[in-house]
Image 1: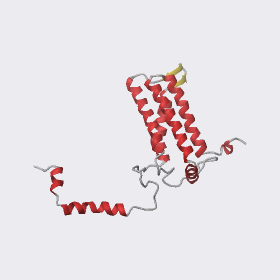
Image 2: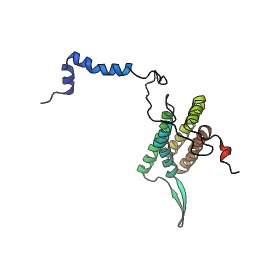
Image 3: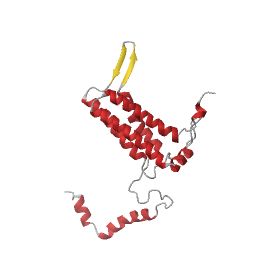
Image 4: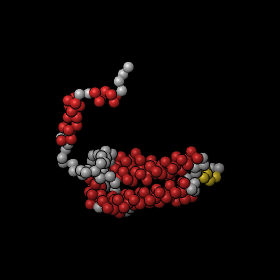
Length: 196
């Protein structure tokens, strides 16, 4: 009969336990001392802002926007909205995801990208410039993230009330919050996007 893990560890000689702990000490001592952004913080962000946008913020916002809509078809206007408890629960999960993702965006040490990315078109900035703008005015970045969180909380209130009209209105507020941040940090030079 196999011994329990607890019995195994309590009977292991102290010398072996101390050797097992040695790699941890060596790794802790050999940590790159150049990265001081997270010293004293229990958080260890691994994803970039762009990765969080792609994995959590955009899919959650897209789901909320698609949850309520008026669609013109050949048969007439089709109003799309959640009907069942399960549908409302799924929309609620997306609103919570969006709300909490704003906290993740603000973790100390979170970078815009894991590597350099160039501008994707006229009026857009490359990753170096976006990072420079966020670093220079992090208070504004935080404020804009909080605006998005408040908008997602409006969506959550509409969902809890099962009010499609209020959810649609909250969706517009979410869109404005997203665009407000993008205009400040990602593509501030809107004049180059205007037709000449």
